[in-house]
Length: 216
Image 1 (cartoon, rainbow, N blue to C red):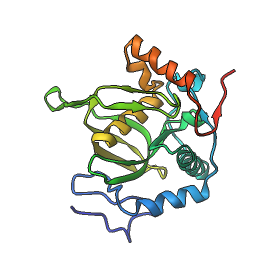
Image 2 (image 1 turned 135 degrees about the horizontal axis):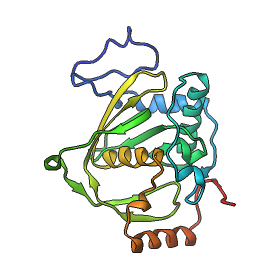
Image 3 (image 1 turned 180 degrees about the vertical axis):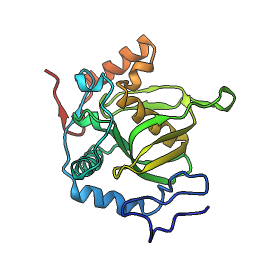
Image 4 (image 1 turned 90 degrees about the vertical axis):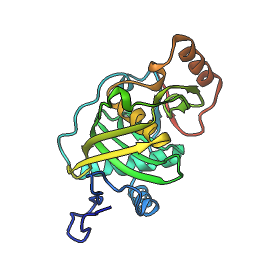
């Protein structure tokens, strides 16, 4: 794969392969740790909080405040032991998500996407995976949910540079799940009424392992 010359690329910009997709698998541990060191962990909003149930605002200003938000999101994600986190999951109405997620081959992906848009796949390229899915905003609950096992997302990084991210298996599920968040959808919104009710029951009976924002 052809990579950008990282010595000439702006600081913080990930290299890309010969198809223009970011190489988010390099130095993942070090990059995640650097974000966490700069960040402050925040409690997680849970289903019922209005910020989770509406489309978030586009990111239009790429500045130090956004970079601090991203660092806080990585810190919050680590505290909650999550693999992906959208800004509205810590109460911020902006289209940005972070991820630290392995794929089905065990390869770790770490990155940031602002203003994400999922690429619509042709029907003949969709292969559904009905694995279990959970969400930090629906703590302790899990349900099977069919999603395509491949996903592509376009957007921007925290510097405002265009990015394309792709993933398979579990990482593809993560990309779709986090993009959904920023348009006001939780994974339980895609379940049948019975399965949604069961997920909410699991949440009611469980105890979150991380700080959450209580709903009024």
